[in-house]
Amino acid sequence: MLAGAGCCSLALLWWAFVRLRGTTLRAAAGWGLLATLVLTITAALEAQDAANSPWRYLTTIVTLAPGIAVFGAKRPQDRAWFFIVLTLLVVLALPSLESWFLRDGGRIELHGFRSVFQLLLLLAGTGNYWPTRCGLAAALLAIGQWMLLDEFSAWPLLGFDRAVCRQVGTCLVLAAPIVAAVLWRVQGTEDGWAKTWLRFRNAYGLVWSVRVAERFNRAMLQRQSPLRLGWQGFTADTAMSPEGQATPTIDRPAARSLQALLTRFVAADWLPSIAKFECRNKLDADA
Picture (spheres, rainbow, N blue to C red):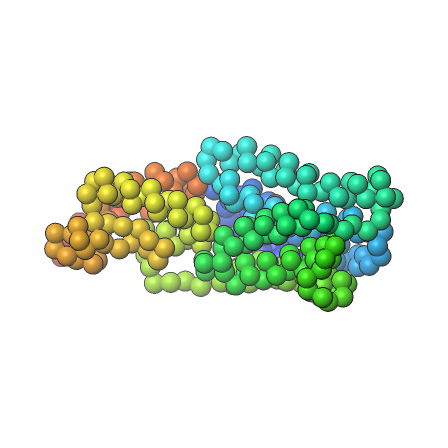
C-alpha cells in the first residue's frame, strides 16, 4: 500500500514540477520529488532492523527540505537558496554520518537542541501552508514528519511503538501530495487578478503572501488609492474612498504594481494580460 501511495505521489509531484516551470517553486517541487522517492524506496524495502536506522533518518530529514526551500523562493536569491537548503541537510545528516563511522551503524538518538531544531523546521515549513487551501495536506505532512522524527528522539512524545509510528508517518507523508492535489483542483468563483492572488497565496503560503500584500498596500497608500490587498483578496479602504464604496477597482497602476511584485516569483502565464484587463474594464465602464 505504501509503495502504491508513493508512486501516486511521485506522479503528482512530477506533474507539479512540470507545471511550475518558470516559477521559483520548482526547486521546492524538486526537493519534494527526491524526498518522496527515497521515502517510497525505504517503504518498499521494509527496512525494520536497527542497522538501517541511519538510512531511515536520512530519508526523514530530506522531507523537511521542500518546506524550507519555499522560504527562499524569490528572485534573484532563489538560486543561492538551493545551496543553503543543501547545506542545512548536510548539517542535519551529521547523526547518520556519526552512526556509520563512529558507532558501526548503530541506532540514532537525538538529544536536546537537535530534536528541538528539527521540530522548529518542521513547524515552519508546514505551518506556512496551514492557513491556505492546502492546509489539510500541510497538517497531514506535519503529523507524518513528526511521527517519523519521533523514532529517533531520545524522549519519544507519542508513546507508540516506533515501527508503528514509522509506518503511519510514512503513509501520512506520502498521502499529503495527493490531498494537496485534490484541494488545489477546487475552483472558486474568482477571476482575473483576484484569482491570480489566490493561486499565489495557496502556492507560496503565508510568509510570502503577507510580504507581497504589505508591499502592495504600501504602494497603494503612497498613491492615495483606497485599494487594499488582504488574505482573502482585494478590498477597498472606505475611509479613503470618495464614494465610500466597498467594491475595489483595480486600475492600470494597481495592476502593474501587483505584476511587478509577482514576477519576482511566478511566470508570465500566471498573470492576466494587462491589455485585456484594461479593455474589459473599459467595456464595463461604457456599459
